[in-house]
Length: 196
Figure (cartoon, rainbow, N blue to C red):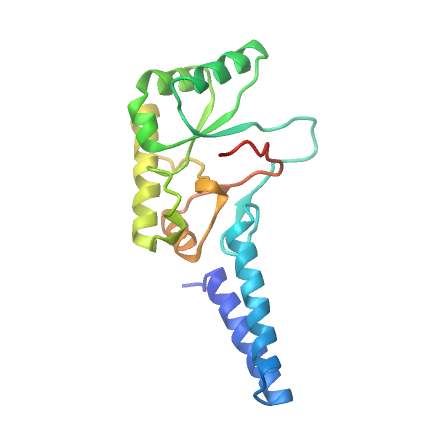
């Protein structure tokens, strides 16, 4: 089995620390500087949605043409989603809706409307917990799988839908779950900054 990206980062940290200690002896700087770099790398891999450090993440499609991919998170919402769908229909546009599994299941009419209007339905986990990044790999996998099952029940396809982690945050356990499920993780290249 190939090492995961997080394993490679840990290995690079160990090698850098060993090299620094070998060259300068065991000092606060020879241990602290590699540790600081490791923390900075992991913070970037976890907090920057488009980071590929922990798991390959798609942030855009081909840049050859003149088009944009629209995506919406956290629905379907009975008040907001119909307005978004109406606006998209008015302009003949399609989007990807990264849906929360339990919300998708609770709003079957909106879910069917999204599918009928040829919008892509992506997975945004089952519950969209703010604490999801702290879950272990098995619980992450269950969250992702339950969200995917809600989408499969709607569209009848067993293929893994695109996945966007809650708040765009990734963690080593999420990367492990994503690898097990062989999913495509999608972030964004431009954000509206309208989250609460």
